[in-house]
Image 1 (cartoon, helix red, strand yellow):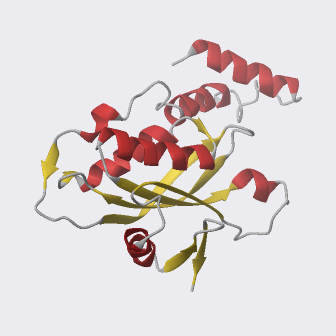
Image 2 (image 1 turned 180 degrees about the horizontal axis):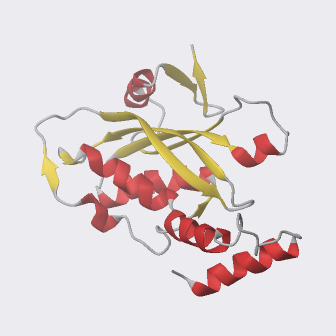
Length: 196
């Protein structure tokens, strides 16, 4: 365990007037340091090696993986945000990755101090660059504990982010097909997903 992190947590709690010598709190600094070490395990990791072996499929159509759960930590308040990710991509010459690898790549990117907007962009970028995909659409929905605990928004508030690249970043039939797979359409002028 990172001793410096443990000592820092102890100092932080003490500065807030919390008695870390009590029976209930004396192991808290080490527990918190170990937890955050795990939550930030994606720092410095590349996504490229996570994909493993790639495969060639005879299919020429879009590939969609929807409803993937993710958990991350907001870099502004170090509070959790979590939700689901929907991915649609157009493989290059049928080159695809194993379905489980998408969850692994999301985990690497989410296990670092993050912003939902950046996480959405980094995931789309990883699919586009690492897989050589011709087009990528990533939609991320997130519940942010910082804004809920502070009382700024009511329970149930969800933040949605959308990143479209390559052939799915251009208005046209392929992009409309991808959006239909998500159950909606897109206004090309505003790039706002509208569910009908």
